[in-house]
Image (cartoon, rainbow, N blue to C red):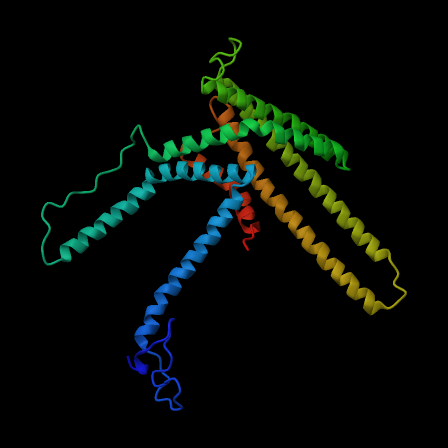
Amino acid sequence: MSEPDRQQDGCLDAPAGTERGAGTTHSTNPDPRRVGNCRPWSIVSAGLRATDITIHKINTLISSSIGQDTALGSIEYLSHALHYFLLSRIWQKVKARIYALLRVIQRRQTTPCHGLSTPTQIKTTAWSPLLSLSSLMFDTRCTLRLLGLFSIWAWGSETTKAPTADRIVRELTRLQLVATTSYQLLENVAFLMSKNVLPEKLWRRFDSEKLYSWSLLSLCVHMMLQLGKLWRESVLRKRADQKAVSSTNGQINMIDKEAESTIEADDNDTDILTRREEIHAARKSLVSSLTWGALCAHWGMPAGIGIPESFIGALSFVADAWELRDTWISIEVS
């Protein structure tokens, strides 16, 4: 085999006219067919890398109990919302438009299509795979939350060892501990009763439906207490800001004003960023608490509070969307 017939490995060839041991070069342009063959492999490599990063993030997310509950809850709420979206009038109109467009395209074809069937409307069936998936995610989350009392105990222990300085916030946190413990305990008993682990009629007075309602009302109380804490913390922030402004105005600068102004500017930037993060977190907690409080009140009361069933999945996802987004962004993959 002659020397020019030998080619190097890789996406690009060596210059076509370069021979080993020869000092002349006829051309430096690569073979376009070799360059074209390289592009699909680079696209596949980039796709595999993005998939690998996503899977590592998902693995990190579901490694903790909070991440598992958040991920399973998102699947539960989205499948519930998607089920009712597919039955909504909006989707029916979109589907009718798509069928009309397909009918126009088929009429423009050379071979006419006879006997084109009209689109049939979706009927509500007794069995729905999306609702079944939502129910499965609910059962899975309840099973994982059977061990939730241990994390509540740890939270109470930390609160007792390092209590908040403000008395109102401290008392509200203690009431939250009582409400959360009641919610988790009642839900555990109701879930075990629904799965025939405990007697269907516990003490001949309470059934699983009543215990579920009471547990949800306890969680609603927890959310209302959280709103009280957010209000109190906002008052404390305003007082701290007023004190900082008054102390800054009362200071008399006697030395090197330029150096002091630089240091104060850096400190102010740090304080401003910290305060913005606190306000942003408080707003997200406000939205989540209001949404969950309304949903728990709706589920806990026999007649509800008027929230349509088709909106429950979407509202539940909105309540957890902030936490899912922040947790996903905070995960770093090396």
